[in-house]
Length: 253
Image (cartoon, rainbow, N blue to C red; front, side, top):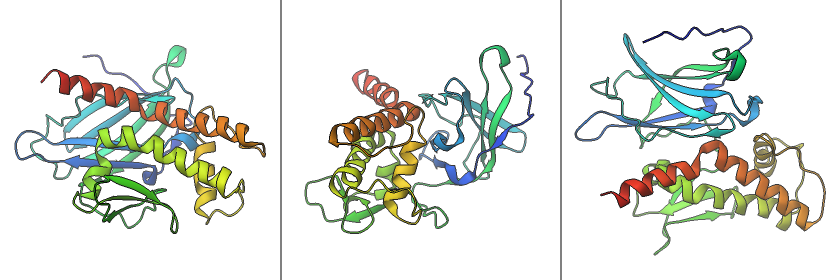
């Protein structure tokens, strides 16, 4: 196999806090993993290639994750070269495509893994997950304080929230509901107070590829901006591809 040579000149450093790796160890078979990538704030070219690498000592596996403008996790994320999840680290590498193929644009290395039940005390997510008595509802966005995603108390909240199928269906709708509340109900187009959850959500949405800055406007203009942000998030995370792959597997059983 040919070895790709990478040019590291001028690469950006991706904060580890913008990469969350969750590793699952099934009762039988190799471990598998999911990755949550928050790359919208790094202004990477939409066509840049994204790779996630798992390694431990001399063992190494690389997985293509699509492009910066449309992150598409591979269907098969089994760590078949590893006998267990113990001691595995991850790195994320973003490289250029086209005429400058292979130039390193950004990297995050030595990313520790989380297990589904782990609690990360050093990262404050935009939408924390909590258990609640929801009767027959699976989940709900709660706005009694800073917004949280409530998950039925009879479910493992961390495992459910991290499941790819759950994310494909719930995340876009939750994002749409939150941005709509900020702009059309609370009328809060303010980007100055970075401690305010509404500011953090607006800045997150603005940084997504192709969305751009929000401007004061009427209800229709806010609707267009919200749909642009939700659509960009879905493309960046490859949500339809994830759902389609899952659906095909179910139909082929």
